[in-house]
Amino acid sequence: MNVMVTGTGGMGSHIASRLVDEGVRCVMYGTGRQIEAMKDLMDIAKIDIFKGDILDREALSSAVKEANVERIIHTAGPRATQTRKDPRTGMRTHLLGTMNVLEVARAADLERVVFTSSASVYLGTKAGHEPLRPIKEDDPLVSMDHEDTYATTKVACEYQGFNYAKSYGFGFIALRMAHVYGPWSGDMGRGSSISNMVKNALLGKSVELDEQVAEWTHYNDLAEEHYLGVITKNVKIAAINAGSGKITSLGDVREVLGKYIKTDMITVKSTGQKSRRMPTDMNLARERLVHTPKYDMDRAVRELIEYWKPRLHLTV
Image (cartoon, rainbow, N blue to C red):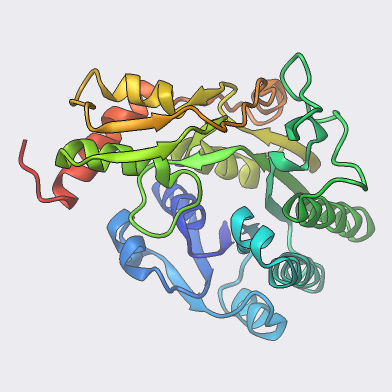
């Protein structure tokens, strides 16, 4: 099976690494601007990288044909904070980029597209609408009067994918990801807070962080779910949650980290925190993709300590 991963950032690179580990021939399409971070994560000699813009449909189509791609995992696009800061660029890249992927899939008669969506599409992730139970795939999506441009782009991209899949017969799975964290030396979104906490504790430096309460989900668990999504024979068209099923604060992370390293210099401010009470429900992922998250915060923190030690030139 030949699989293309669009996007050469942290998520795309972890997915590509997982595919290679499973013996899948993987090609990547994206800017490649974080090549050193990619090399730090995996042996890029095992992956064909096509440098190009997701908005360039002809270049994307050419890469798909040259590599004999059969399935695509589409991660390319600005992060949530970038899209909210620059909605014109964010929405244009997400919407037109996804349309290009779907159009190329249609024209090349590909078997499946797996789309990296977001749990932000749920109304239940917005303040004032939190449910009293874990969020399920058939729960209400964001309404017309909400303020989150990133959520709008992800909903619209999902609808494009479902429309194309229904009309042209290929598979489309949208994986609604929670907040990402884990080992990555390149640019990150909110997940960088956890790495920053670990790095500063290792170096004995002081750092003050704003509290964040989120459904933190490890890169490796998300990469595993994308891998299962691209190979599954049980699902053709679906939206499936991709989370950890747990809500954790940075204060909780500091407490876990304190079991292994001194955290006296790490301060987590409690003022102004926006608490999310409920995680996403992972039952459908277990039933349809046979996926169960493997990382709790204790394991993740221990592995992050070992990941950052050599990169910070620490021997103890």
